Length: 481
Image (cartoon, rainbow, N blue to C red):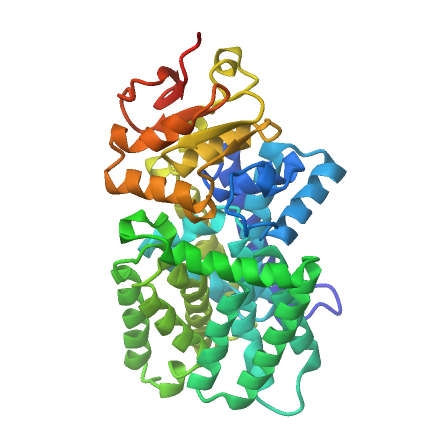
């Protein structure tokens, strides 16, 4: 061993290298399958490439006048212009960058980073959907990473004097999360947990960081007041403009309690008790309280659990494993290297396995494209509007045609459309997408407009002529004279 390279540092370097290597290898292996997330990552990339405002892409209610994900789209636009990356390249960047960011954040705080890999492996086995979500290439993953950093930073705020470097880092991250991902108001949830845990001093510091960070993030959008009202309005519209829960988009619906993860938590607590290490402080912490509150709120909106509860749970579990590893294994021990390597190998195999075609299913997708001569006549004309029964029509068609000169009535959130059209769409949903429910839209259609329906047999809307343009997708237009 070279002079100056002590054994503990040698072990830490090996563990850290294995940690970083497996995270990179997992992300590269996943994108090598040709994996493309099938929802919002598509529209974020297409928005960045299009160079257009949302008002030129969607038919919107009047009060929506600005982009709610300003920072993320600015970043994608910058990468597009400076590197020349097109749609697929930007998708790959989104998936790898955000997955890596979330996974690597703990390495700066954990003395036993292998604890994070063990946590990931358990969650991957218990409920893979939670791991899959971190590959979706969407800006909410940045906010999840901020929750992870908060989970490791906050103990530094318990004592005097204030640890200013940590406070500044947290403030900057919250500002970036506000600019990149518009759910700034949700940071009130972890702030509340600090006071419920009676961590008064840390709670005050985190509160100040949050207020300043959110304020700076709003200013970074260029239109802070407009951003404030629009994002808050979107929150109430998205969760309130419906008569049945089934009308909500999937990730706004309630969940069933994620029973498997509940068993995992109880298993962790039982394991601590069996080691004679039970201590109320293990659960009476802001982070564990955030897990509990997010889980309860998941019965109202599953995203609270997914975006706030899961990252907090990862932090708590990793700290539990780190506590055990510290007490059972010397930091200089080479066993750490072998354990990390073994866990990394199993983690790589378990996540990159193409079970049930989870990574390759997108390769069979076929999109409506102006570049295909067979599609061109069936796509909207200049200034046309696409009426559809599924948001996936918007995701896929916009992704394939970011520069097309038409707009979409149904985009990535139904409540963004004008009130009269939302009422039509809600009636279509209430009537289980029965053909007659589309009648108000059919009457509004012009020769340049199209109705695109997916997931059904040949539509029985006789006023339109139909073509099965791609598998499972019917395009309807007014009859040609």
